[in-house]
Image (tube, rainbow, N blue to C red):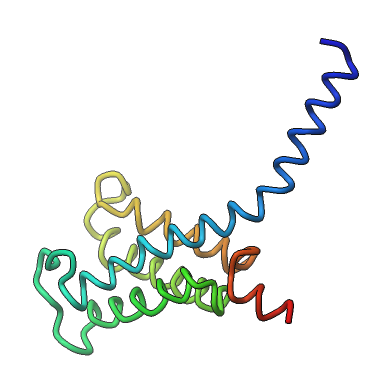
Length: 143
Protein backbone atom coordinates (compact mmCIF):
# COMPACT_ATOMS: atom_id res chain seq x y z
CA UNK A 1 0.00 0.00 0.00
CA UNK A 2 1.45 3.32 -1.01
CA UNK A 3 1.41 6.46 1.10
CA UNK A 4 -1.18 7.97 -1.23
CA UNK A 5 -3.61 5.04 -0.99
CA UNK A 6 -3.09 4.98 2.79
CA UNK A 7 -3.97 8.69 2.97
CA UNK A 8 -7.07 8.13 0.83
CA UNK A 9 -8.17 5.26 3.11
CA UNK A 10 -7.60 7.40 6.21
CA UNK A 11 -9.46 10.32 4.64
CA UNK A 12 -12.33 8.01 3.69
CA UNK A 13 -12.58 6.69 7.25
CA UNK A 14 -12.44 10.22 8.63
CA UNK A 15 -15.26 11.28 6.31
CA UNK A 16 -17.31 8.24 7.31
CA UNK A 17 -16.81 9.03 11.00
CA UNK A 18 -17.63 12.71 10.44
CA UNK A 19 -20.83 11.75 8.59
CA UNK A 20 -22.00 9.11 11.04
CA UNK A 21 -20.91 10.44 14.46
CA UNK A 22 -23.88 12.84 14.76
CA UNK A 23 -26.29 10.13 13.56
CA UNK A 24 -24.92 7.67 16.10
CA UNK A 25 -25.46 10.30 18.79
CA UNK A 26 -29.13 10.26 17.81
CA UNK A 27 -29.15 6.44 17.88
CA UNK A 28 -27.61 6.50 21.38
CA UNK A 29 -30.30 8.94 22.53
CA UNK A 30 -33.17 6.93 21.01
CA UNK A 31 -32.02 3.53 22.29
CA UNK A 32 -31.12 4.73 25.78
CA UNK A 33 -34.42 6.65 25.94
CA UNK A 34 -36.40 3.54 24.94
CA UNK A 35 -34.69 1.33 27.51
CA UNK A 36 -35.10 4.01 30.17
CA UNK A 37 -38.77 4.46 29.20
CA UNK A 38 -39.47 0.79 29.87
CA UNK A 39 -38.37 1.25 33.50
CA UNK A 40 -41.09 3.88 33.92
CA UNK A 41 -43.63 1.62 32.18
CA UNK A 42 -42.83 -1.21 34.55
CA UNK A 43 -42.92 0.96 37.68
CA UNK A 44 -46.17 2.75 36.86
CA UNK A 45 -48.14 0.32 34.69
CA UNK A 46 -46.63 -3.07 35.48
CA UNK A 47 -45.75 -3.60 31.82
CA UNK A 48 -44.26 -5.84 30.49
CA UNK A 49 -44.28 -7.35 33.97
CA UNK A 50 -44.79 -6.00 37.47
CA UNK A 51 -41.77 -4.67 39.35
CA UNK A 52 -40.27 -7.08 41.91
CA UNK A 53 -41.75 -5.15 44.86
CA UNK A 54 -45.11 -4.49 43.19
CA UNK A 55 -46.47 -1.23 41.86
CA UNK A 56 -45.46 1.73 44.03
CA UNK A 57 -47.97 3.81 45.95
CA UNK A 58 -48.75 7.20 44.42
CA UNK A 59 -46.35 10.03 45.30
CA UNK A 60 -43.71 7.74 46.82
CA UNK A 61 -40.07 8.00 45.78
CA UNK A 62 -40.40 4.98 43.49
CA UNK A 63 -43.58 6.34 41.90
CA UNK A 64 -41.91 9.72 41.30
CA UNK A 65 -38.93 7.94 39.72
CA UNK A 66 -41.38 6.07 37.46
CA UNK A 67 -43.00 9.33 36.34
CA UNK A 68 -39.59 10.84 35.56
CA UNK A 69 -38.56 7.68 33.69
CA UNK A 70 -41.77 7.44 31.69
CA UNK A 71 -42.00 11.10 30.67
CA UNK A 72 -38.25 11.65 30.44
CA UNK A 73 -37.75 8.49 28.39
CA UNK A 74 -40.49 9.47 25.94
CA UNK A 75 -39.06 12.97 25.52
CA UNK A 76 -35.57 11.57 24.98
CA UNK A 77 -36.81 9.15 22.32
CA UNK A 78 -38.43 12.07 20.51
CA UNK A 79 -35.43 14.31 21.07
CA UNK A 80 -37.64 17.03 22.51
CA UNK A 81 -36.12 19.31 25.18
CA UNK A 82 -33.18 16.90 25.13
CA UNK A 83 -30.67 18.93 27.12
CA UNK A 84 -32.83 19.84 30.14
CA UNK A 85 -34.57 16.45 30.19
CA UNK A 86 -31.25 14.59 29.97
CA UNK A 87 -29.89 16.72 32.82
CA UNK A 88 -32.91 15.90 35.01
CA UNK A 89 -32.86 12.16 34.31
CA UNK A 90 -29.07 12.07 34.80
CA UNK A 91 -29.62 13.56 38.25
CA UNK A 92 -32.39 11.05 38.95
CA UNK A 93 -30.01 8.22 38.12
CA UNK A 94 -27.28 9.66 40.34
CA UNK A 95 -29.83 9.99 43.15
CA UNK A 96 -31.06 6.42 42.54
CA UNK A 97 -27.51 5.11 42.71
CA UNK A 98 -26.70 6.78 46.02
CA UNK A 99 -30.08 6.02 47.62
CA UNK A 100 -30.75 2.47 46.40
CA UNK A 101 -27.43 0.94 45.36
CA UNK A 102 -24.45 2.46 47.18
CA UNK A 103 -25.73 1.52 50.67
CA UNK A 104 -25.68 -2.18 49.66
CA UNK A 105 -21.97 -2.31 48.80
CA UNK A 106 -19.08 -0.07 47.79
CA UNK A 107 -18.62 -1.75 44.40
CA UNK A 108 -21.19 -1.22 41.64
CA UNK A 109 -20.78 -4.79 40.38
CA UNK A 110 -21.85 -6.01 43.83
CA UNK A 111 -24.55 -3.44 44.58
CA UNK A 112 -26.40 -3.71 41.23
CA UNK A 113 -25.80 -0.08 40.37
CA UNK A 114 -23.97 -0.54 37.05
CA UNK A 115 -26.95 0.44 34.92
CA UNK A 116 -27.73 3.50 37.06
CA UNK A 117 -24.14 4.70 36.61
CA UNK A 118 -24.24 4.12 32.86
CA UNK A 119 -27.56 5.93 32.50
CA UNK A 120 -26.29 8.81 34.63
CA UNK A 121 -23.27 9.44 32.44
CA UNK A 122 -24.92 8.75 29.08
CA UNK A 123 -27.66 11.22 29.98
CA UNK A 124 -25.13 13.72 31.30
CA UNK A 125 -23.35 13.47 27.93
CA UNK A 126 -26.66 14.09 26.13
CA UNK A 127 -27.29 17.09 28.40
CA UNK A 128 -24.03 18.58 27.13
CA UNK A 129 -24.13 17.69 23.42
CA UNK A 130 -27.88 17.59 22.71
CA UNK A 131 -30.01 15.11 20.81
CA UNK A 132 -28.26 14.97 17.47
CA UNK A 133 -29.62 15.49 13.96
CA UNK A 134 -32.51 13.01 14.27
CA UNK A 135 -34.35 14.92 17.00
CA UNK A 136 -37.33 17.22 17.27
CA UNK A 137 -35.03 19.78 18.88
CA UNK A 138 -32.99 19.86 15.67
CA UNK A 139 -36.10 20.03 13.47
CA UNK A 140 -37.48 22.94 15.51
CA UNK A 141 -34.14 24.76 15.50
CA UNK A 142 -33.86 24.49 11.70
CA UNK A 143 -37.30 26.05 11.11
